[in-house]
Image (cartoon, rainbow, N blue to C red):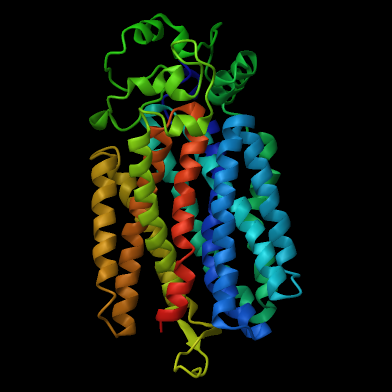
Length: 454
């Protein structure tokens, strides 16, 4: 059992992976927060129009969509670690060059590549999931979500400290700091033994397990890793495809013990993207995501991530717009946000995200993934609807903060559910395509907020 060297409690390796992967995962929340500040400041500097400003912002999200579609399949083909390194390198390079962009065209292009790298942020979460014991997976993956919240707080605090004295260019360069630290730590980042085993790299997978046991202080006897399909139970399942519970020898539990899904077919080679039961050749991870056992689940997950993208990105940008100064009205009577912000209330809404992560941390294993996720999404939607008829800035601030809290709580649970519901061989592809749907929906947020928030 691959779980043995991981230990029964939170281990030293789990903490190491949480920090490294968490820093990379924070890159997206830093980027989302930066979008709300960078656009108005660059627009004021270059005198560009509101539509050009929205274009710069949406270029980042477009890059995230394409990056998610690229790095997820890449992680399934060449490995989680390699995909992680490439994505982080792109973010650091493009982020640093953005600080020296000579024109708004160049800035939009460079931010596209930053978004492209950020699109790979689902890979660190998948890697963490594959190193985490089943009974600790929910809490540890929710724990990584804290880095998202810390990233939101970090970029607001950094903007508050840097924007006035140093300007948006210095802020843009410093925003790449979290992922740069993660990249410097990559020497201590192992490859996923589950992925190695799926690729037939059995000896490398066993070496990773031995290193894991050594780091965690677990004594291992001689062992040999085998795929579930190669065991007697796996062979019987291929001959007798009766429905069984989702408890898997490699810890591939799909949901909490209260919500086990009848998806034994997902762990067969055909469903997982390997050789088919009837001697068929290997299929791609993308084909596995749309296999007869997975396509309904995939569509439901896409719908949930679509709602996440619209809700979260709009709330973040709406909050920044709400607490920014307005320029003089244009010919149509609309004022545009300028590079002057009231950072105290913006920081308060960012801090609310921390409580949004702590909420599912307390409920995800007690009540289950689906109840936690469903109730939090419902509350976030209701609170967002209450923003529509209001005119008081104080009221809007309170409602937006509460909506953002429950939105983050729902999304934190959604990240856990997504990593658990896809088998190892297609996890990177399945998860990243879900994230791509969220980014595609979020790309509309800058135009909505720019044209209607005032």
